[in-house]
Length: 158
Image (cartoon, rainbow, N blue to C red; front, side, top):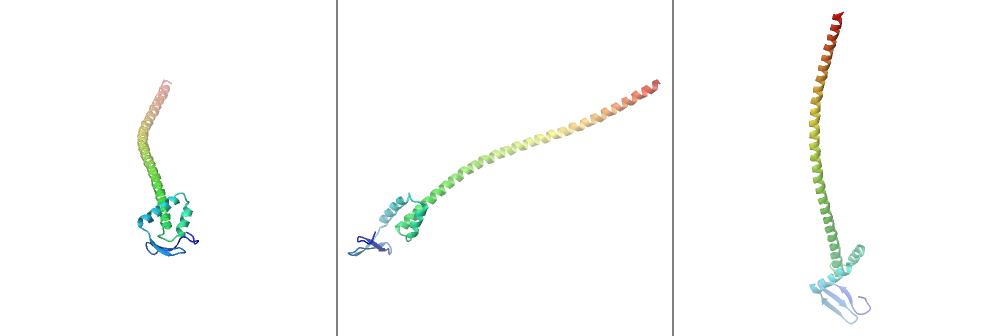
């Protein structure tokens, strides 16, 4: 709205706009429905704009103005969409983590059972080793007794 003649908005005291033309100044009251339609139309216009452009336009307009409200709504919508996407991605990651955790728990249980089996085998091997050691000592003892018996028989015949 330019200064070339038709309409120039000068101020917004409350819900009224002071409109000035070359002929006369008029106070126009905006109803909430008209303001909401205007803001909705501006939000639709901002859908294809960049964050930077929307933020700049928001800073260029006073708080409460239709442009400021539309920019705020659009930024809130985009932030909400990003939060929803992040929550969805987090949910998927959590599901994968749950699956991985369950898999690791199963692997840990299997490892625990395998370790128990190895411990039992080692205990059995240790017992078998003791029995083998005793058998070796008995064999050495019998071998020595037979060797002494053989030597005694050899010396007895001479």
